[in-house]
Image (tube, rainbow, N blue to C red):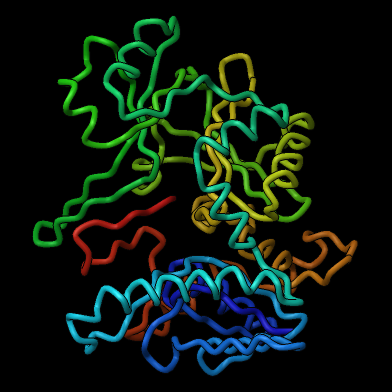
Length: 368
């Protein structure tokens, strides 16, 4: 068995997980996605015994594939301008062929591409969570000025507004960033109607929070951490990036855990990072799930969480094994060890910082 990670090997989660798995004796292959270069080329032989080669590595029965951050396809830049659009469409089609075909092979895929594409949709998440018994704030997803105004006019609760996808804008020349954040919104704060059409948004009942929770799902195991923000910000993510939160391991309420496991079964996923808000009465409210959300940053704030060790135990678990992740987590080195060793080596290929933003891009979408 080998572990195939579909992501660039310098991805901020791929690099430490690959290192930890290899230290434990596992073979790890990284493959970022379809491209014209030799290492990113793909050959799929569809026969009685299908054969898929990702670059130089053949996918074999029993392998584990972690779809971490599959990059978009890149065609050969030398293609003629007249053929460029055709080539781009062919590459996109081939990209999807590869991603979907992997889940038809006798391998374990975390998470299956079809399931991940489906559950990424916020509307699906909120509907599924509600149907699985989780508390979900009332929400409007809209780019209609009339719809937004009507929602705020008839909503007796305080309302927040947030983006569908987190974004980070960077200005490398002055080393500053701007980050999308959730914010409270009232009817008299609405901009001109046209502005509301610039980008769709999510308008939702505000949960007056006692704390935030980040929960990580790994198979049939659920791990929750309370995020204590001394600044009491509505959105904790920017403060987390500045190191201004505290992470505490907390038990997941039994009814919430049942709802999460029911949600995962319905969605067809086995891994994901889930955000909850806890109100003043101690009720947990489902906000969203990122099926490949960041989780190692929890180890940075609290090494006792041991997310790196648990994830390595999860990704290498044999089919049908009854051994708990806690029983196997000691086989793998910690995230703190990874950081320490790479800092000591002081090589040019330093350990990627979990908050790193690519300077080559005007902005980077990033989910903490």
